[in-house]
Amino acid sequence: KKLLQGTAVAGALAISATAVQAADMTFRGASLFDNEHAYSKTLIRFGELVNEYSGKDIEFDLRGNSELGIEPDYINFLNQGVAIDYAIAAPSNLARFAPSVPLMDMPFVFRDLDHWNAVLSSGVLKPLEDVILERADIKVIGYAGGGTRNLISNKQISNMEELAGHKMRVMGAPIQARVFEALTAAPSAIAYSEVYNAIQTGVVDGLENESASLLQYKFFEVAPHVTLTQHSITVRPILFSGKSFAKLSPEMQEVVLRAGKEAGEYGRELESRQDGEKLKQMEAAKQIQVHPFAERAKLLDLVIPVQDSYAKELGAEDLLQAIREK
Ligand code: MAV
Image (tube, rainbow, N blue to C red; front, side):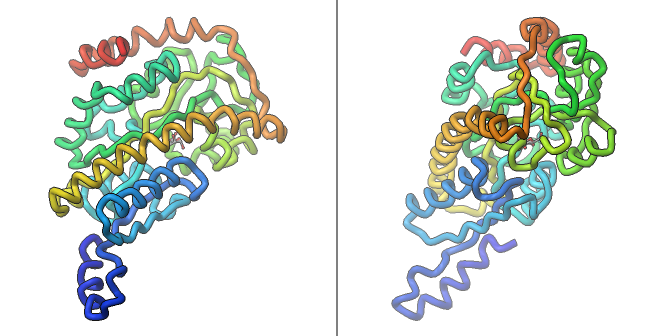
């Protein structure tokens, strides 16, 4: 772990008057994607803002392209305070610490982008941030996301009949499987890094994901049909290890929180704007065929009772209500 190592380097170099630019310390981050993806851009912006607001020269060592694994690994690292200091991950990856966290962006919780924006610019998710800190020792410093998730499959799906029994990969949180079971599909939880192969070998016939990830991981090569279920708009917390955070001075903690919040705003604007563009780009390049879903209202009818009973089991009815009312 290099968090404090840079200080010694800076100390050694400070003997030269021209060495004041030497790195004060190093923070390491992880991303599933290359530097063109909104998550990586958000994390890069975060580093730039930290340096701008602190007046320091901290090295931000961002390891992209899944070099350090996938999001569940990042959660383990952040929780243990090893390998990395910051990352972006889907709330579903935090379910094993706190089953209420995936409620943040569970399918069909947002009516539209305005609703999603209203929720993210309010403090309504604060109880979930508290539970993440308490149970996982991970600090939420901002929110990225803004991709709209659709079904991606190796066959056309345009109505309830075609959706029935559809074998699809979902994220590991139990609420994800419950929602898609309620929609009569046949979901299974598979690690993100295995999904392409799982489709290619016929283990599943598709997944659900947003445009930027579909483009970057080229799922269309094995699953070229996109069905506009528009079932989720992603919320992607920017996470900082509680153990790394505790080592910072109060001033640096303030800087990290401010930079995280602003980087998140930048990332959300970017990803939500690019989402539709990327879908059109893949369609124009004949990489995907886009299908409307004839009975979207029916999906909502099937899912609302699942959301309700999930929130009830967790004692999170007030939170769900507060999100819905935004
Ligand atoms: C997309 O790549 C992102 O939303 C990422 O945050 C998720 O973890 C991933 O999908 C997934 O479905 O696991």
